[in-house]
Amino acid sequence: MELMANSNHNNNKTMFVTVGSTRFDQIINLVISLPFLDTLNSKGFRKLIIQYGKSVKIYHDAIHSIQSQQNNEIEIVGYDYKTSLDQDMVESDLIISHAGSGSILECLRLKKPLIVVINENLMGNHQVELAIELQNKGYLVCSFISNLLELFQSDKYFNSVSFPKSDETIFIDILNEEMGLY
Image (cartoon, rainbow, N blue to C red; front, side):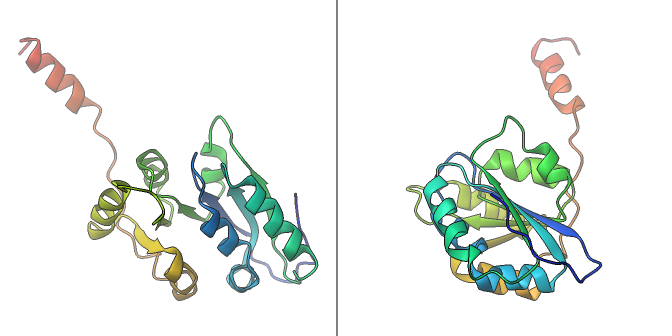
Protein backbone atom coordinates (compact mmCIF):
# COMPACT_ATOMS: atom_id res chain seq x y z
CA MET A 1 0.00 0.00 0.00
CA GLU A 2 1.40 3.41 -0.90
CA LEU A 3 0.48 6.95 0.11
CA MET A 4 1.76 9.91 -1.83
CA ALA A 5 1.13 13.64 -2.08
CA ASN A 6 2.71 16.46 -4.05
CA SER A 7 6.34 17.22 -3.39
CA ASN A 8 7.69 20.72 -2.95
CA HIS A 9 11.11 19.95 -1.42
CA ASN A 10 14.34 18.99 -3.15
CA ASN A 11 15.24 16.39 -0.53
CA ASN A 12 14.41 12.81 -1.36
CA LYS A 13 15.58 10.71 1.60
CA THR A 14 14.36 7.25 2.53
CA MET A 15 13.86 5.70 5.95
CA PHE A 16 13.75 1.95 6.42
CA VAL A 17 12.10 0.37 9.47
CA THR A 18 12.50 -3.33 10.24
CA VAL A 19 10.91 -5.37 13.02
CA GLY A 20 12.32 -8.78 12.07
CA SER A 21 10.23 -11.90 12.47
CA THR A 22 8.41 -10.93 15.65
CA ARG A 23 5.49 -8.62 16.36
CA PHE A 24 6.43 -5.08 17.20
CA ASP A 25 3.08 -3.30 16.90
CA GLN A 26 4.18 -0.23 18.86
CA ILE A 27 6.90 0.75 16.40
CA ILE A 28 4.58 0.26 13.42
CA ASN A 29 1.90 2.45 15.03
CA LEU A 30 4.45 5.12 15.87
CA VAL A 31 6.13 5.42 12.46
CA ILE A 32 2.75 5.63 10.72
CA SER A 33 1.44 8.31 13.09
CA LEU A 34 0.91 11.90 11.97
CA PRO A 35 3.54 13.38 14.32
CA PHE A 36 6.17 10.94 13.04
CA LEU A 37 5.22 11.43 9.37
CA ASP A 38 5.25 15.21 9.82
CA THR A 39 8.76 14.97 11.29
CA LEU A 40 9.89 12.74 8.41
CA ASN A 41 8.54 15.28 5.96
CA SER A 42 10.20 18.22 7.72
CA LYS A 43 13.57 16.42 7.58
CA GLY A 44 13.38 15.80 3.82
CA PHE A 45 12.32 12.16 3.90
CA ARG A 46 9.99 11.25 1.04
CA LYS A 47 9.83 7.48 1.39
CA LEU A 48 9.18 5.21 4.36
CA ILE A 49 9.77 1.48 3.84
CA ILE A 50 8.43 -0.75 6.60
CA GLN A 51 9.20 -4.43 7.07
CA TYR A 52 6.37 -5.16 9.50
CA GLY A 53 6.78 -8.92 10.08
CA LYS A 54 3.88 -10.36 12.07
CA SER A 55 2.38 -6.91 12.69
CA VAL A 56 0.45 -7.09 9.40
CA LYS A 57 -2.96 -6.15 10.85
CA ILE A 58 -1.51 -3.22 12.80
CA TYR A 59 0.26 -2.00 9.66
CA HIS A 60 -2.85 -2.14 7.50
CA ASP A 61 -5.03 -0.57 10.22
CA ALA A 62 -2.53 2.27 10.65
CA ILE A 63 -2.32 2.85 6.89
CA HIS A 64 -6.11 2.88 6.63
CA SER A 65 -6.50 5.36 9.49
CA ILE A 66 -3.81 7.70 8.17
CA GLN A 67 -5.00 7.80 4.55
CA SER A 68 -7.72 10.37 5.18
CA GLN A 69 -5.52 12.47 7.47
CA GLN A 70 -2.16 12.45 5.75
CA ASN A 71 -1.28 15.71 4.07
CA ASN A 72 2.47 15.37 3.86
CA GLU A 73 4.68 14.05 1.12
CA ILE A 74 5.66 10.61 2.35
CA GLU A 75 5.36 7.49 0.21
CA ILE A 76 4.79 4.50 2.51
CA VAL A 77 5.67 1.01 1.31
CA GLY A 78 5.29 -2.04 3.53
CA TYR A 79 5.76 -5.79 3.43
CA ASP A 80 5.90 -8.67 5.88
CA TYR A 81 9.06 -10.52 4.81
CA LYS A 82 11.63 -10.65 2.03
CA THR A 83 14.46 -13.08 1.41
CA SER A 84 16.92 -10.21 1.87
CA LEU A 85 16.60 -6.70 3.28
CA ASP A 86 19.90 -5.59 1.72
CA GLN A 87 18.41 -3.47 -1.05
CA ASP A 88 16.10 -1.59 1.32
CA MET A 89 18.97 -0.98 3.73
CA VAL A 90 21.37 0.16 1.01
CA GLU A 91 18.82 2.61 -0.44
CA SER A 92 17.97 4.09 2.97
CA ASP A 93 19.42 7.20 4.55
CA LEU A 94 18.36 6.15 8.05
CA ILE A 95 17.45 2.75 9.46
CA ILE A 96 15.29 2.06 12.48
CA SER A 97 15.59 -1.55 13.59
CA HIS A 98 14.48 -3.90 16.30
CA ALA A 99 17.35 -5.13 18.47
CA GLY A 100 18.00 -8.41 16.63
CA SER A 101 21.72 -9.06 16.27
CA GLY A 102 21.50 -10.04 12.59
CA SER A 103 19.65 -6.86 11.63
CA ILE A 104 21.98 -4.71 13.71
CA LEU A 105 25.14 -6.16 12.15
CA GLU A 106 23.76 -5.86 8.60
CA CYS A 107 22.97 -2.19 9.20
CA LEU A 108 26.28 -1.38 10.86
CA ARG A 109 28.27 -2.90 8.01
CA LEU A 110 26.53 -0.47 5.64
CA LYS A 111 27.71 2.48 7.74
CA LYS A 112 24.21 3.98 7.86
CA PRO A 113 22.78 5.95 10.77
CA LEU A 114 20.99 3.37 12.93
CA ILE A 115 18.45 3.70 15.70
CA VAL A 116 17.79 0.43 17.51
CA VAL A 117 14.44 0.30 19.28
CA ILE A 118 14.18 -2.02 22.25
CA ASN A 119 11.03 -4.15 22.25
CA GLU A 120 10.11 -4.08 25.92
CA ASN A 121 7.43 -6.74 25.37
CA LEU A 122 9.95 -9.52 24.72
CA MET A 123 10.56 -11.78 27.71
CA GLY A 124 14.19 -12.14 28.82
CA ASN A 125 15.27 -9.63 26.19
CA HIS A 126 18.96 -10.44 25.66
CA GLN A 127 18.92 -8.07 22.70
CA VAL A 128 18.95 -5.11 25.07
CA GLU A 129 22.47 -5.96 26.27
CA LEU A 130 23.87 -6.08 22.73
CA ALA A 131 22.16 -2.84 21.70
CA ILE A 132 23.32 -0.98 24.80
CA GLU A 133 26.91 -2.22 24.43
CA LEU A 134 27.00 -1.13 20.78
CA GLN A 135 25.55 2.24 21.77
CA ASN A 136 28.21 2.61 24.48
CA LYS A 137 30.85 2.08 21.78
CA GLY A 138 29.21 4.78 19.63
CA TYR A 139 28.12 2.53 16.76
CA LEU A 140 24.38 3.15 17.06
CA VAL A 141 21.75 4.86 19.16
CA CYS A 142 19.30 2.91 21.32
CA SER A 143 15.76 4.00 21.92
CA PHE A 144 12.53 2.88 23.46
CA ILE A 145 9.16 3.51 21.86
CA SER A 146 8.51 6.18 24.48
CA ASN A 147 11.40 8.39 23.28
CA LEU A 148 11.82 7.42 19.61
CA LEU A 149 9.96 10.40 18.15
CA GLU A 150 11.88 12.84 20.37
CA LEU A 151 15.19 11.18 19.44
CA PHE A 152 14.38 11.38 15.74
CA GLN A 153 13.40 15.03 16.05
CA SER A 154 16.69 15.81 17.84
CA ASP A 155 19.04 14.46 15.11
CA LYS A 156 21.24 12.93 17.85
CA TYR A 157 21.53 9.66 15.94
CA PHE A 158 23.91 11.01 13.26
CA ASN A 159 27.03 11.15 15.43
CA SER A 160 27.85 7.45 15.32
CA VAL A 161 31.32 5.94 15.20
CA SER A 162 32.03 3.88 12.09
CA PHE A 163 31.68 0.14 12.71
CA PRO A 164 34.98 -1.65 11.99
CA LYS A 165 35.29 -3.95 8.99
CA SER A 166 35.18 -7.62 9.84
CA ASP A 167 38.50 -9.43 9.83
CA GLU A 168 37.95 -12.74 8.04
CA THR A 169 41.45 -13.93 8.93
CA ILE A 170 40.61 -14.25 12.66
CA PHE A 171 38.50 -17.37 12.16
CA ILE A 172 41.07 -18.91 9.82
CA ASP A 173 43.86 -18.21 12.33
CA ILE A 174 41.87 -19.79 15.18
CA LEU A 175 41.01 -22.81 13.03
CA ASN A 176 44.62 -23.27 11.93
CA GLU A 177 45.85 -22.98 15.52
CA GLU A 178 43.27 -25.51 16.78
CA MET A 179 44.23 -27.94 14.05
CA GLY A 180 47.93 -27.51 14.87
CA LEU A 181 48.79 -26.02 11.51
CA TYR A 182 50.88 -23.30 13.16
